Image 1: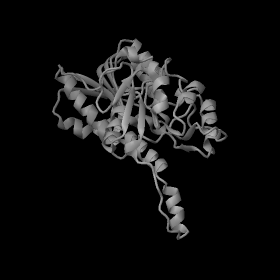
Image 2 (image 1 turned 60 degrees about the vertical axis):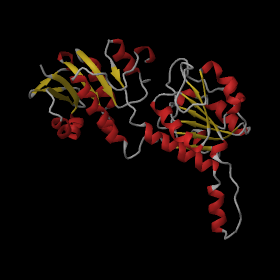
Image 3 (image 1 turned 30 degrees about the vertical axis):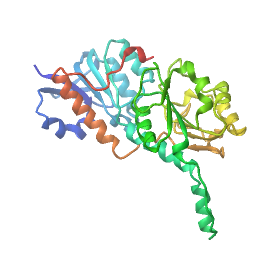
Length: 329
């Protein structure tokens, strides 16, 4: 009995030859941005569609198709498993899918790119690169002392694939790492592990704070005035998770008072960020437009994750990155 697989039509155009090369017994159908399925040459309404495995690739973001695709998926009669390119599942769509009893696998493909983004941004803030460039322009021969990463203390809040990838790159520099996660269990590359209940005790030690946690009712707005009051004076904050984790007014106050030396922000409450938002022009804010995942290896890892998981699914083997429904809120 073939496994029925559904995907966006542009996704099949992209992955089709590699999927065929696997030699699996699959029955593949596609859906388009108008919300219609093409099954055996016939146009089918999603309410009449039952599939074993549905893959959402990043191709649904092109041309503003995403929200329509989400509606199409929700309208399906039944889905055995949903695999998505997203790492964070805070969009209401995923909760609705999960509440229908559909298992979901998310993605770790962004981890390498995002962790390299974090390292590049932090190192460029710690090292006096701008000052060195100015000295060069001025032909001014001066030494430029700098703090060593080996003497820094990092706090990584959230330890899924992205938090783990950050720690794996920080640790070889010899930095100390504190991890905050759901449970205080022993964790690779961490010198200390705690939960959100330990934040006030841990924040005074952190030179770099990286937000890599999911957005939910527990974490929404947790980086508030009390959070910034507890942080080590002069720390760097990096947010590569979700904008609503932060109280922006409290963040700006922490920057203005010198509580934080800098903030690196790749995510925001509203995206695109309105042009009149003060974060655009704040001198201590380094901001990018939700682009930390845009490494040139991400698409390949998205593809490979799908190909690996569809083989596992067909062979009834454990899947990669299944998500606990309790964590989709």
